[in-house]
Length: 125
Image 1 (tube, rainbow, N blue to C red):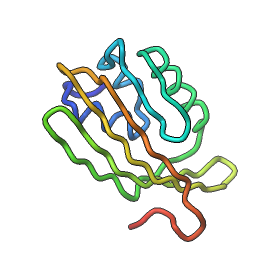
Image 2: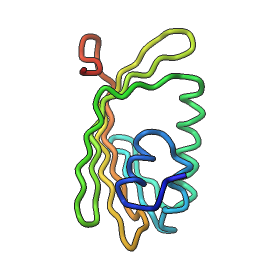
Image 3: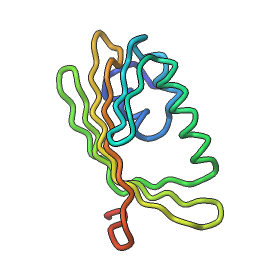
């Protein structure tokens, strides 16, 4: 569980795939724009997408080579690069930028930019 309920902790939980820790902090009318894919509306749609992502990741291991966090009064931005290694050994690197907006301790809006990186563009450091 998220220790406390700071905006930063909630955002970190979502961006690092510990989705269930953030569920209690979703506003009922939360929206999530997945740039290039679509827009989700409502807490249940948010949770359903998180659960589908967790299932898709399955037993893959995740290594964050970059995880930068910028915190404002009612927003958090997380810029990350993750290397995913599947059980069969296949690897995928993904660069992400997640922008979260909060109101009264609840997540009201998220925007996510994700791009799969080509060979040689993998996780830094």
